[in-house]
Image (cartoon, one colour):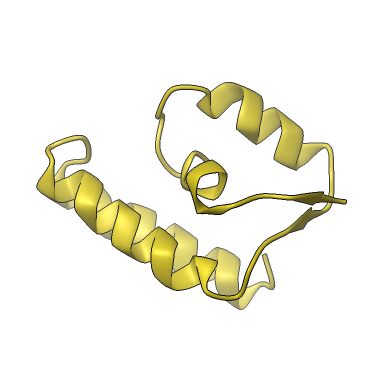
Length: 74
């Protein structure tokens, strides 16, 4: 099992630098994170939208995927 902080978990949803390595690492291992990471990830995704790194239309899709993942226990 590996521990991922919010900075790593956001790369599961955004193509920030290093995203390919993080996704590969998370796909190959069980992942643990702090409970407050859910709130931090949502905030980071909204911040990416405000900064123009994520289009508003894409934000809804990414948030939906994130919520689906959380509901599934990810």
